Length: 311
Image (tube, rainbow, N blue to C red):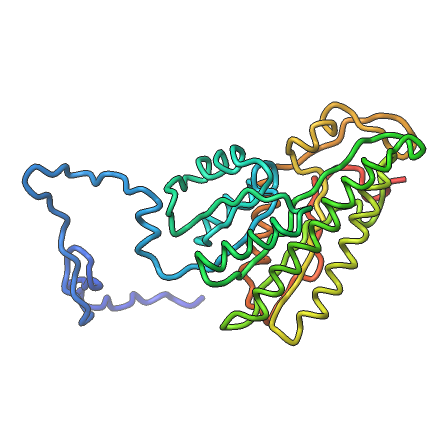
């Protein structure tokens, strides 16, 4: 058996410290930071600084337009983008709801460099054009459009769906998405530096329908075609377009999922939901990619919702 021989211990030296570290000798040429001190009449703890004031001193931010920002997924995405240091333009039909979103996000100054609210009906071409004109006048460019405004429409048998209800869903989910995409595309094509990103809010209904949802399902399938065409037509101008298909985010629009909704076999069932913040984090990830990379299609859904195997 081999015998272990004791190793000679290296002579101990005085420990050194990195620049800015207390104790020892600094090993870097960088200056150490002085200890904080308080001036006369000043509290030791610093007072909280309003987020608007902090952001006004930051470097220029990228500009995001979020439609349907007054509630639900739009509100969650606006909050997440703001936290990720985007300047966010809130668009939606109700001025009061947009103001609530701004307060919840923590951006309340009317001239904040990090937000702007523009009441907009996306079904109206003149209002959509006015929205993007206001954005360009204030911020000079558009880097991101989250094309989110939408509506389910009434869940009724096909033969009971009125023409007016059909048109409301089509005008909001499809025509509204087109009008916003067209205005964003125009801005991104003509700005310098050129380019930007459009993210369309699709749905699992872009793949598989629910009972009594023909208008919603038809428009969400059409949004997929819109996404593909935008992605192709945007290539020469550095404009990327992707689509996020969402399933059962907990919002005002999905309340019936938690009380029971008809399944493909006609039997109502309660469905799992997920936090809208999980959708928002996905949007922030897609938006943060360089324009040389694109998430063309993504699905985010409540893990146990009946989608895989629906029908």
